[in-house]
Structure formats: structure tokens, C-alpha cells
Image (cartoon, rainbow, N blue to C red; front, side, top):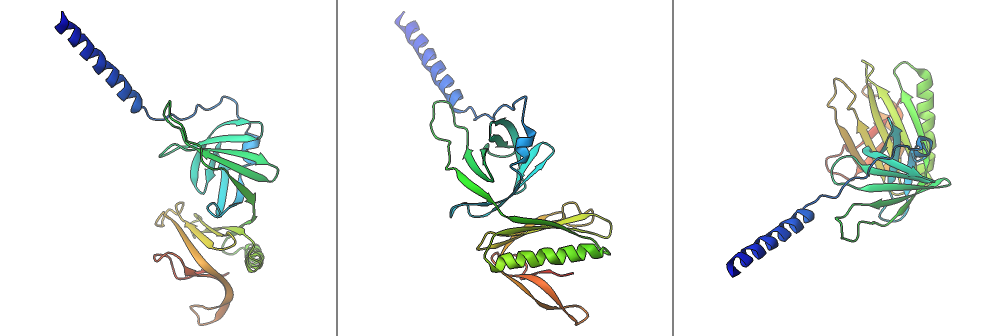
Length: 250
């Protein structure tokens, strides 16, 4: 009888340990998506923003497309809206929640991540985003009006750079076949960032490059015909693999 009791106790302990182990292995879950979402409120999150504080002082580009938000090209699934709050979560990789509180012209971002049941933590420090000057231009071959708009936009951004004022300039160029190539130059008040995206170019390398530079100048650049032309030039790259200069002329 004692032997049977010991066997029963042993099996009971094994069951308890197995149950606890399976709970520990449970992965944190994503949020459920609400049935009703205020998409007009979600659209208010889109824009170009500058993070406040030393750690978050960088430019954030938030775009709204096909009922999704993209923050610096990372897709966020919108899970709900509450009063002046937009609730989101990452779609790929490790689960993170990014909740945006709209406060007038500013945003407060409240990041967090799910934790296992019974554990504490998961809440990260909130940070604020403030809007910055942003312009979008197109540059098409043979369109004189594009050249004028393109040059004017660069002149405006260069003036902001000299004032140490953050800005963002988005440029869309087109190949001979009509495929778009996207470029973006941002300035956070200290450092310049350059993004080149040709993933929509049917005959291109289809990659996204993101480099940082310390200097922006407007000066004469020698062309292939040995004639000097004025151009805006990013120089003094931070990354070793980056191009030494990025030239914007017309």
C-alpha cells in the first residue's frame, strides 16, 4: 500500500512540474484587434516627428497606408482607438506595443511589451514627438516645374540646416521606365540622415540604404562636361560603407 501511495505521489509531482513548465513556456500573446477603429484618429498620428530627449532625439517618419501605420518603414498593426489614443503592435519579430497619445500638435509614445502571466514589468519609458518641417517633391525628367519646386525645396531646407532647425525632405525620382526611386534627407538638429530606396525599380538592386552624414553644403560641383554646376552635397559620412558624398543637383 505504501508503495502504491509513493507511486501516486510521484506521478502527482511529475504532473505539477509538467504543468508549471508548460506555463513557463507559453509565449506572450498579441492583442486582439478591436471591431471598431477610428481611422480618422489614426491618420492624425502620421507625419514627420522629432523625438525629445537624448536617447530618442531622432527623426521618426510615420505613414498611414492600407489601414496600417509604418514608423520608419516598420509596419505596425492598429489594434484599437480610445479617446485620443491609438493602440498598435509590431507585426513581425518580437512583440512590442506602441500606443500613441495625441496631445494637440504633439504625440506621446508609450512603448511596452507583453510579459508572462504572474510577471511584472513590460512598460518602457514614454517619450514625446514634436512635428518638424517636412516637404515632399517629385523630380521627373523633362518637367521644368519639378526642377523649380525641387530647387526651392532644397533652398528652404538648407536655410533650416544653417539655423540648426530639424527638417525632412522626401524626394521621388523616376527611371526611364517610370519606376519610382525614393530618397529622404532628414536633420535632427545635429546629424543628417539619408535614405535611398529603389525597391520599386524593376531593373535596380532593390535595396534600402540608410546612411548618416555630418555636413550639408551648397557649392559648385564639377560635372562630366567639365562645367561647374551648383549642387547640395552631403559629406563626411559616419558609416565606413557609405558613399563619401551624395550630390543633389538639377
